[in-house]
Length: 96
Image (cartoon, rainbow, N blue to C red):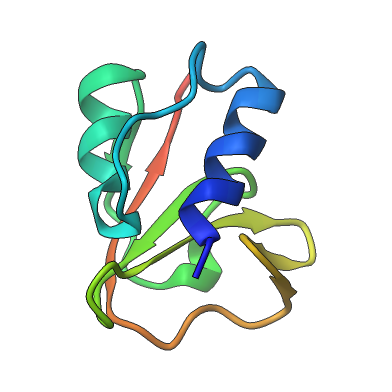
């Protein structure tokens, strides 16, 4: 239930965002990342095809879910070799 909090902290610590993102819900992550922090939405529908370091946003269960693609799977408020089961809304990354 704290996935977006942990992903925000990881993005900030990695230097991917200059300040802590303001939105409250995981399902809002894509809009904020693209409008305020220079992320772009990638044309990817399969979470396993997402590049390492990209942010995956899911709908479902009210607030949704967000996780970062890692070399060995996915990370948010937990680590897993498997992607979230919710419907994937979008995959977001910083290019360049």
